[in-house]
Amino acid sequence: MNLILMGAPGAGKGTQSAKISEKYNIPAVSTGDMLRSAVKAGTELGLSAKGYMDSGKLVPDDVVVGIIKEYLSTEACKNGFILDGFPRTIPQAEALEAMGVKIDVVLSIEVPDEKIIARMSGRRVCTCGASYHVEYIKPQVDGVCDKCGSKLYIRDDDCAETVANRLKTYHAQTEPLKDFYAERGILVTVEGQEEVSDTTALVLETLDKAQA
Ligand code: AMP
Image (cartoon, rainbow, N blue to C red; front, side):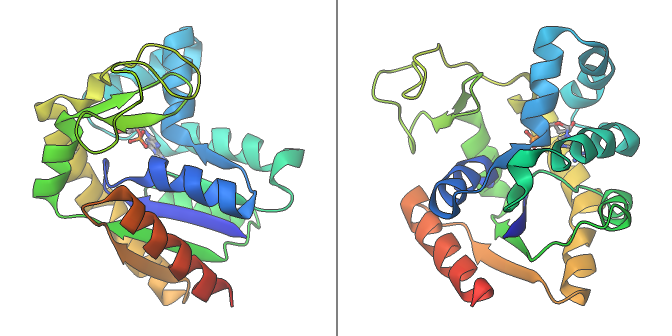
């Protein structure tokens, strides 16, 4: 299955993408995680992306399209993949089509802005890509990643002002992709639930149906 996971920042794409990856045994790639790694490593890509990310703006299309093109050409993707956070603009979606990549399902996780704002203030993440929440998804040991034991941290772009900008960017530039994929008959939506496990159950059920 070739899947695109959509949803506002903080809708739970990363968390659900890990569950889907486990169930369907396909790799998940997050352009956000790749860009954060590049920022941390201080590469040229990271240096050019940081300013956009810290202010809640999108990194230019050609940069992320290049990253995804390289990733999709790897052996890991030959039996399917999950794209988490890509495409985020119509030109990115058009670039994906121009690469000849066939997408089977686009799943959008819907969460109202007020809930997103409340959630993001409690988000804690790990460099390994795992994501937690101080109330909803607590790690076993406070502040420590269950998966790799590293110290959890607050993302630079989870501050209130940047969250507001990221939501604005999402509605203006990314949400139109729902119509783009609905026109192609491959969009499915799921309402994000209070409990993460309830959202996961809905997501997996919806994907099973979409696959049938
Ligand atoms: P995320 O972790 O998916 O919320 O991404 C964090 C930040 O990385 C975003 O706010 C953007 O600045 C940047 N980013 C991630 N994916 C993309 C993309 N597909 N296009 C442009 N910018 C992106």
